[in-house]
Length: 423
Image (cartoon, rainbow, N blue to C red; front, top):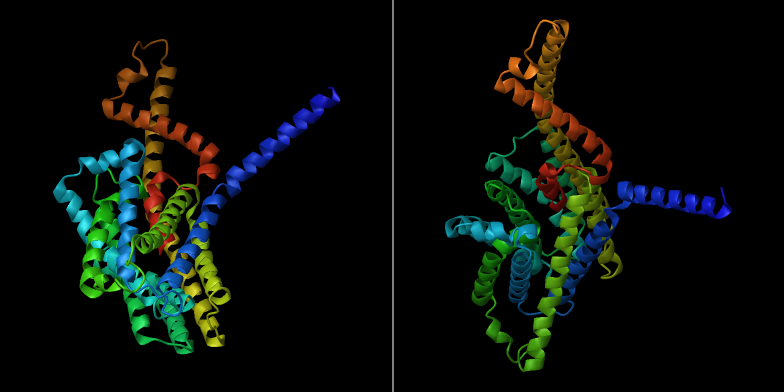
């Protein structure tokens, strides 16, 4: 072999190895990096724009409603341009009654969650906010129990105790404790738990379920926008901003609108990165990523905004994160246990079908010279279906063995993964 040929073969082999390693271990890294980045940017944006010690925008709910409006326009445009890919065709086929039954309750709770979160950032530090919001798994479990989705077990009780202990340490260690900010943030965590539980119930009731997060955004964002706008008008009275340098002339109006657009861009980018990560990463990766995201946000609060963090805060933060990890691990184990009986039953049925097939085949092989009937003539329709299913399962198993390491969990687990990610 010529030296050039050997070098070309070596280069090709190395390239294939690198590509294979990237697909198996690193394909989710760009989406995860984007999720971390835009989550930190969105948290920093909210603190800078809404924080009383920063810009102190006088109407945070109004600006949040602009975020929701832009999300509505964005999701409507994308699902209209790509209806089959992003689920716009499914949304169009929904009746008004079905659309409102999902959009109104989920949209109201979501707007309440986001609105209270942004209001709390006016009064408390981003670090304290992140640690309090980390209590969301407790409320997810509580709402899931009330809706009959989950049952209370000792591991779940232990998770609640650990997170509650961490929250207690966080609160008593906060040097600039604000009661109203804490209540607003804790209320947002409670609504966040209700939001994900209710969204899961409503979306799962659709047959077939919505294809993408963009389609879900299109369904929820109208109610989010109108409810937040009405609350802003009642509570904040936005017309009072006239004369304060936000709506006095067209330039200031465009500046205010640009603030809303920037926050919406950060939120949409974070959601898209989150969805891309769900499609590529396994549940374990999502667990680790969720905890790292919280740690990055706390790091930004301490280093960028100079949030005070004493020894008690640190212990409280670590305890809360430990509770979150325990919850995510328990969630993953429970999901695997629920899936195991169905897989075992399917495997048993297919094995029985294959055994019947082999028995029939052996029977006709023994009497090959005397019988003119074929195997298909001997089997009834149910047996034929079982054998066909067995052959399809074997073929599918071979394909999944080749592609499993690349694609992670199957599409049937994506919604559970999404819940594990977002909480």
